[in-house]
Length: 353
Image (tube, rainbow, N blue to C red; front, top):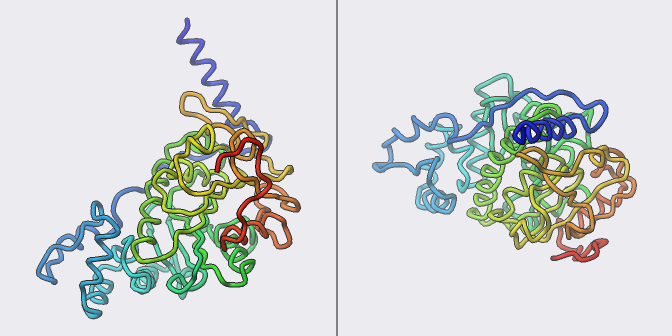
């Protein structure tokens, strides 16, 4: 009987989490894309340099960076030509070489023609497709930011002209413009996101896989000499960032429209990064139960004072995807955080860092 009651509670919570807001769509179950990039078998079999190439599945980004530094330009470009899908996704490889490799990989499949001619730092066509695009000069910029999106984002939807502020590409472009072009911003659609707002969005499986990929990605940025980024995490992306936080090489974690970070408070994140949170009063995420039970739900609202995050003002940011709209307080604050000129926001009572 007790087990039956617990089951009823779990079912009730699942229903509340999944349907807590009128109009939510039922999501389609997704299987996360994990493991080394396509073409890894051919890469491992390549003996053209007279020695084994670093294993994409196990080599640390710092070791990959050291490997490429020891090669001649001809050797580097040869690897990019023979193994574009591996080099283009190899965290720690030179940034310009990854652009070159991904340009080649994109040309091989007409489905991804919209990515041609862009600074593509990562591209994986498996599943719904994953991509990371750089806005600005990653090698020269003093400041770097990474945008981590929520549900319904993949290589085909990360840049939609009809949604200029709600996609990672739109957010990245707006953030770069708001910093006067001084910050390089990466639109990182680098994990399998939930589709719709169903059980995938209420659970943490996709976020756990995404956290591994995001952690390795920022390790790769550090290995190539890029500054520690400010990481902006939208909606379900804040769950990814929360799980990645203890290992994430970031100077700031900024969450907005968050359903929770799978942490009880800032201290639980175990990060040295400054933690910021924004939520507009019109954002429907407020109606989502900020709880966690039997693996469903993502815990307390980071925008609540008790969580301890530095508060980001969000006046003028309408709805769930309006935080990067021009003229909003949130975009101005985001730009200042990215450039390191905002040391404190509307700090919540009892906040930690």
